[in-house]
Image: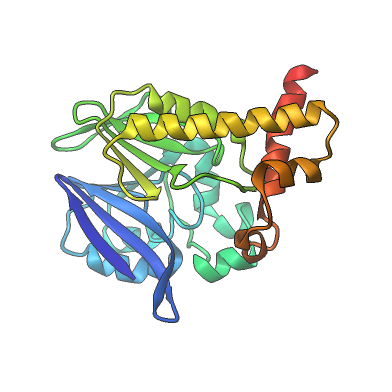
Length: 276
């Protein structure tokens, strides 16, 4: 399932597998001039490739290597000779062999599927990607994943944030996420002069600084509470319940891969390292 919306020169494609007549767990791709940012999941690859047939695309930038962002890479490479895929150097082995380098769990296979291998070239911190009308600065923003990047168009004040910014107030974290990295990257984005924030898993924001600062304040408050309770000798289980409340459906859906306890563990892991 695909939904299309426009924000001036930016076209947004919301992509999701259709299950029981509804799109489930949406992710967004963006097209500006001939630059595509992310390509959705494997289940939407064919439909998305058809949707893009009449559009000029020279390059794809993957914000990171998770399966819901690289799914149409291979089909677009087959459709268009010479199309270039760009990603952080840490992402390249995953793109080349997703099944071997980044095994996915059952819930991920159900909602997003296995991406096909694709060939990509590296971009790194400080690189500038030029299109006909815009220049996009590459920002390395780890935390959600080690290979995560954002793109910043300083003239327009656009931030394409991938999964670095998500809607709502996080109560759970995936086992391999780094909450301290997420916090540092959010602070970096909040320091930019920005007019629009284009996330992959949330609605477009027209008040980027305010939204980012609110997210940072929320996370810092939760982190502070976790650390204080830990200092008092509370167990991880007790901290989890006191700070992040009761069980969440996502914990069951992901079979324990995305949990409140992982959020607490990520906070304490870095805090313990810094106090050694």
